[in-house]
Amino acid sequence: MTLLTIMGAQGLVMRGWPHSVLMPGQLRKNNARTKGMADLGLAYRRHLHAMLIDKEISVTKVHSKVERSM
Image 1 (tube, rainbow, N blue to C red):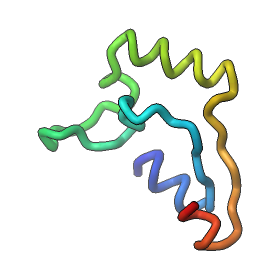
Image 2 (cartoon, rainbow, N blue to C red; image 1 turned 180 degrees about the vertical axis):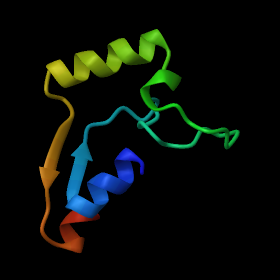
Image 3 (cartoon, rainbow, N blue to C red; image 1 turned 60 degrees about the horizontal axis):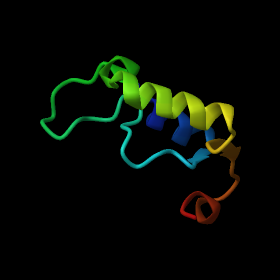
Image 4 (cartoon, rainbow, N blue to C red; image 1 turned 90 degrees about the horizontal axis):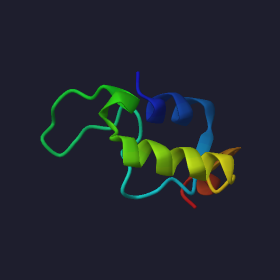
């Protein structure tokens, strides 16, 4: 299971994820198997860490499909 699958099943939406950073479990362009966070280089990990600390990334529970698509 990927992070995206788990979050979707639980009705969770993540906002503010940097577009340039793959989510853990997201396939790379060459369709190689992903290793989650291990695929991210140090610069991406630091950027992601800073965003989490600064609360630029949020996780919210939604209750309807309309809310999930926003």
